[in-house]
Image 1 (cartoon, rainbow, N blue to C red):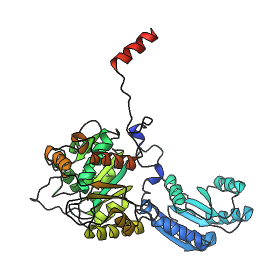
Image 2 (cartoon, rainbow, N blue to C red):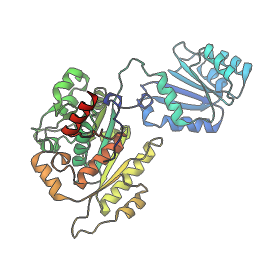
Image 3 (cartoon, one colour):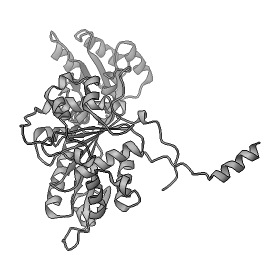
Image 4 (spheres, helix red, strand yellow):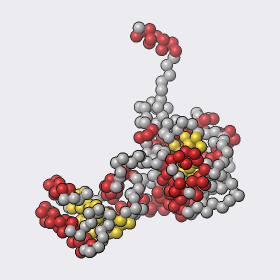
Length: 418
C-alpha cells in the first residue's frame, strides 16, 4: 500500500455547500441574449434545482418591470442588462419600484466593472454576474443565497444500482460501505431499499428488521432520536438501515417518502450508501438522479451491456452538469462462460470502468456464509483490494498508514533520548 498523509477528519467529508439542493423557491429570469437563456435553462434542469420552479423569458430588466407591474415578484429574480454604468443603475432603480422587499435579485451584465458591482450591491442586489454564464457557477451562487450559514453539513449520497439482477450490486455496496467506515474512518450509513429481498441482514449476520419500513411509513416523524433507534450500529463508524426481507406485507410507499428518509439520513451521516433494488419505478429513478455519486454494477454479458447503456444515457441526460457514473464490471472470468471483454464493454458504453472485479466464488462465498465482509475474511486478496480502491475513489481518501516500530527500536530510541 502506498504511504500517504493522514486523512482529514471524518466530519469534513460530505456534500459541499453548493451541492446542497436549493429549497422550493420560485425563480424568474429575464435575459437579453440567447446564450444567457441557454445557461439558465441548463442550470434549471440540474438536480440541485429540482425543487425550484424556474422560468426563463426574453426582455431583460425592461421586460421584468413590465411583467411584474402590479404582480407579486418571485423568491429570486435574475435579470440581464445590455447597459453599463449609470444607465444600468437607472434601469435597476425602475425594477426596484415593482420588486417585493423579500425578493433576491441577481443582475447579469457583459462588463466586468468593479464600481458597477459595488453600486449594485449598495442598492440591494444579491449578486452581479458577468456573462457568458457557467451553469454550475450559477447554481453555486443560487445555492449560496439560500444556504443557512448555521446549518449543519449534509452527507454525500452514493447510490449503487445493478444493471441486472444478480450482478452483485448489493454485495459491493455493503462491502464498500464497510470499508469506508472501518478503514477510512468516515461515519457511514448503509440504506437497504430492497424492502422484500434486502440482504443487509445476511451480509452483516444480523436479524432483519422493520427499520427502513417504519421510517418510510411516517417520514415526518423521523427525527434524530427515532433515527438513532431504527438504525443498527455495527461499530464506531458504521450504521445499517435494515429491511424486513419479508413477503408478508405489501410495500406501497410513495416516492416522496424515500426522498424524505434519505434527506434525514444525510443530515446525520457524512456518507450514505444507498443499495437500490433491480427494479424500475419513479422513486428509483428519482433516487438515482438526486444522488451525489452513482455506481453501476454490471456483468460482462449482453443483457447487462444493454441495460448499462440505457442507464448511462438516462443519467447523462438527467444530470448534464455532473460527472458520469462509476462503472464496475463484476464477475469477470467465469469458467466456460462466454463474456464481452472489458475493453469492448467500455467502448460501447463510452465509459471507462472504475473497477473490473474478477470472479472469485471461494472468497465471496466464504464471506457470505460467515456474514462478514471481504476485507474481514480475506484482506489481501484481489477482490478485497478492488473494494478498497473503489472506496478510496468514491471518497477521495486513503487509509492512514502507521509504521510499526519494533519493541527493541523503541527501547533504543528511549535510551538515546535519556
